[in-house]
Image (cartoon, rainbow, N blue to C red):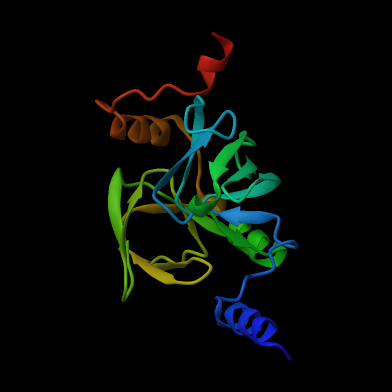
Length: 180
């Protein structure tokens, strides 16, 4: 074997192994808040945001930097930076999407041995058991108010309580800008 081939082989072997993500068509937001853009550019209009714990389906990939997504709950379609969401397989996607509580605190920390994250109201807490929730690679403790969707009775009193938490919040215009 020539030195050139050996050198190339050693460089290739020493590089970090790439993950085969061709079979991963779903993702979860692992950051507090991620902007969803109208098209794959930082100059685009922000059409929405995805919050921590929200899941989405990847519709398209543009170079290494952008994914076109559709959110699971609201069906919002737009573009996100590829590093701002974490790819998950089909089984994890279904598990994380179908078994989540909703954070009810304006902002409350979730933590584990390594990290502390500020979880904002409306964020999803996958596999929440009343004390902790599970993300694809870490388990977090969350001791703020949260609601499980299956036992939640929606009524006007609850809606008013939740709306009051948003009083004096700044406006962040989104999707309606597209129609102007």
